[in-house]
Image (cartoon, rainbow, N blue to C red; front, side, top):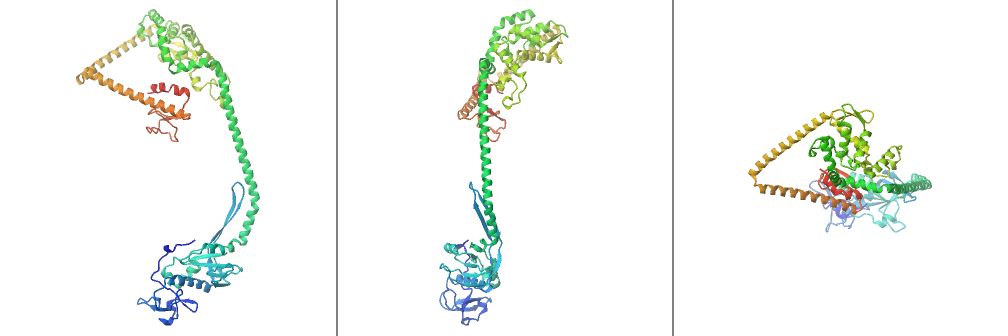
Length: 569
């Protein structure tokens, strides 16, 4: 440690705190007044005059000439050495001894021994003793264990580096921060020099070579081979674990690739059916349904004439929307009319029939798509097999199909069953338990009466709606001219449509850009419909909504994304 000269307190009022006489330093209050004191300046050797101020303060002044600038430093420096020599003792600073031994793999074996400050007594002490290396410490003391202790006093200049490294057992006492009052107080100054002032070691074999240090060093040396073997065994275990983990990852990847190949091989016989399934599940059913309705128009008119109702007022119980109704080749009204007319309309209440009977009429009337039947039979065959608990086959259904494909495959039996259950909600049928059978609740006349009542309600609702539109037209006609009103409405509609189209295009472009950058997933916001890169927090960076979910950027997802967005509310 060292302190810079310009950071120390300036004691401008205290020029020479001690006078020198016959090789010793004296305080001004301990000698005669005036020239009789017989003292001279420790620095410039000019005679001093002992004085006393009006306030009763004793001090030294140079007899002739200006005050010497180095008098304070030299006087305090010599007084500190004199105190040490007179006391024959000193407090040693604390010391931490670090014992460290290199091991392997960059590791070390170390232990730190702490030694608290302690007081030592001198057998003898001398000032300014020149050593064999030509250097001269301020005080050299001989201790009881025949070790030499060298003491340096810091007032304005710290020990030079070459001196601190060349001399063993060197401690430095820092007196640079002593106040004027402390320097003038003999008791306080002695306490600072001997114990209280900051002090530190430069080199210290006096402590570094203690038996306790040797014992700890020897114990550490004995542990070095043991620690090296322990570290080597630990490294071997870590490397073995790493190799095992790498092998496991490689085997997992191999199993994954093998499963992918196995799935591809298993899917090959069903590729055409799966492509048809994908097409009809995306947008194909929208156009297919229109074509089926147009093709079935003559047969529907024949049914309407036979049952005596207008084709435009088709009974709702023979036009029920059922999930995956595309398994049948014809419009749903054809096969639902066949089932309803054969098993319900002409039967008395209490008549019981099975789903298989209804399915037979539906298949006879509308037929089943070959590819849909093929996929349905495939799924049924896998569902009958024991459930495999292996992680690779954790999906119920066909193991080599995707969850979306498994979910989309539905049998004709399930479609007809759904239709019959919806008739139960309308009060036409009642489902019997436990067998999959249904009981007719309403007679034919009751069913037609309900149909006519429903048609009257629909007509009345349409009349009320038309009256409401006419009233609104009359009100708007008083506010806006006819052409201006429609022009304004059209402009607003076009603006909203353009805004929605632009936002959907942004979302599609975002998803394609993220996929092109190599990312397999994206964060989709259900509020603003935008795609963003996944973030650690579930929050949309555009609208700050928390209604987000992670989506997989598969080819199917990107291809049908625009249609999905348009169908969202």
